[in-house]
Image 1 (cartoon, helix red, strand yellow):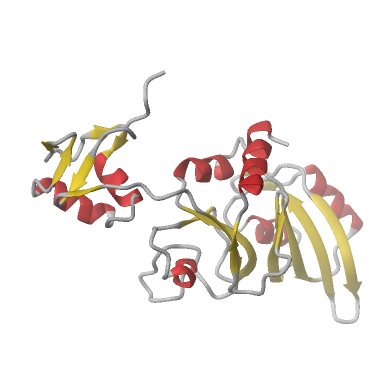
Image 2 (cartoon, one colour):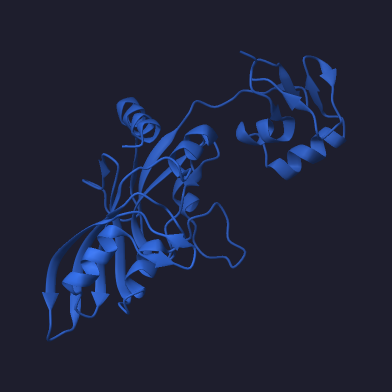
Length: 245
């Protein structure tokens, strides 16, 4: 089986040496060599086993890193924000390797988020055909009816298509305050999906937190805290995705 090829600037960026844009500039300036030959073409693709030097320094790929993070609300799931708002990677500025979030949580949503420097793992976790269960706790305006629960569990039609069956568990309801607390488990990751599912029935989600991702939970982590996933946890996540269970 032939080795997988990747664009040279992408490999340099993945190493944490510099950004992809800066890597492209270094290539164009003739400051990058592959197997001791100078490369100036941006379309150049390389193998994992190729010897790459940038500005005379051998490129070293970082060890794979997987972090479980308890994202607070009012934080962007991104590595940067043009409006100057806080982003999840702000909490990991001391790391020597560049990491990025796996999937996303909305600005107003808190909870479990994985960050990594492993692109293949990210694709495995976020590709639509791989179904990792994600559990959320939501606070809704209104009284969630039994019929609405049944429809959500079967799947409903949103503007971007039918949702996969969900698991709904009503935790509490208060008619006087017109509030419902509910637990919902889904296997998809569409943009603002949980909020849109309840909005379909006229229920605004006023508070939302992802509390489980596959076998992972937030035990022992306050908002803004994180921990490294164990090799076993990473292995289990890969297995779940590949088996689609």
